[in-house]
Length: 309
Ligand SMILES: NC(=O)c1ccc[n+]([C@@H]2O[C@H](COP(=O)([O-])OP(=O)(O)OC[C@H]3O[C@@H](n4cnc5c(N)ncnc54)[C@H](OP(=O)(O)O)[C@@H]3O)[C@@H](O)[C@H]2O)c1
Image (cartoon, rainbow, N blue to C red; front, side, top):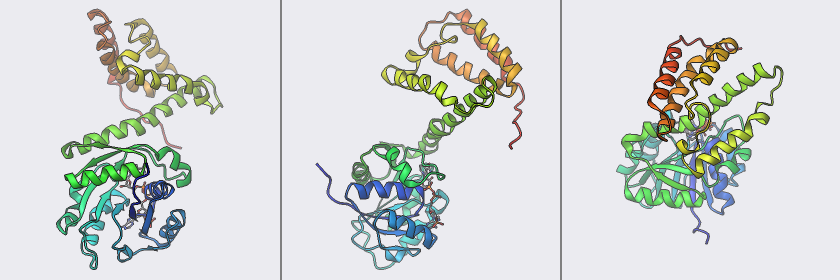
């Protein structure tokens, strides 16, 4: 059954605001106002969200608004919260305000809580590349998880908003906010770095070809599916899981020859893979010792970033 229509205002007409706003509109919720720093962004986003009330001023947000989503960069959230709290002519009872920052808790919205608004943090656990059009990102933002904290009434509204976006919430203890955000960085940014490393390997194996994902996508996808259906340690295959020190030693030699800058990465990840393999209790003490000593001997090579082009 469809949830009752929500009336939502968006402050910060960038990628996240446009994408989440669009999912809400497609699910028959209403955008009451779009406010941004520049008129051009506010207008563009307003057109995308079928909202005519667009402005650079917070004064246009109407009383019928139930949720105000602050989707500015995280550095602007505090100023926006203060400015909103100073806005006259709004009765805050019945209005909820959230922000989309991964790093900030609901505390940054304290000025709004103090005037009677319900507050919560509402971080979409997804990547929204600014280089892509919001329309292109919308499908990947349906049904995602939102990292949330706040008082009980805030959590209730967060649940409702997540449902309106076809998603669900993950309660993040406020003191763990930075830790949670680091996990998001591992999931998206470090995975991107890993893919960049694969691209570099492929570049040396097949010079001039840019289709590294054609070669590696099946193994990447199967790995994720296997981890999902079992666990990281159960899904682990390969030389570390088998205690194959000789193989890993020859990898180090090959990487030293073709891509020496990647040696510290390979050494660190071999150690992390060893940690995972040890959860299976399939390695002997001697294998663990050999693999860890080998990796540690390569680990502390100096980091030599390649020149950017
Ligand atoms: N991008 C991601 O992958 C991602 C993922 C999860 C969470 N988030 C979080 O979502 C939030 C928005 O990120 P984004 O990627 O959508 O950023 P963005 O594309 O740069 O959009 C931010 C928008 O906020 C507007 N803005 C800046 N300062 C403002 C102010 N003082 N008042 C009103 N509007 C203001 C900008 O203005 P103008 O265009 O009008 O100049 C811009 O349109 C951030 O807190 C970010 O940490 C981002």
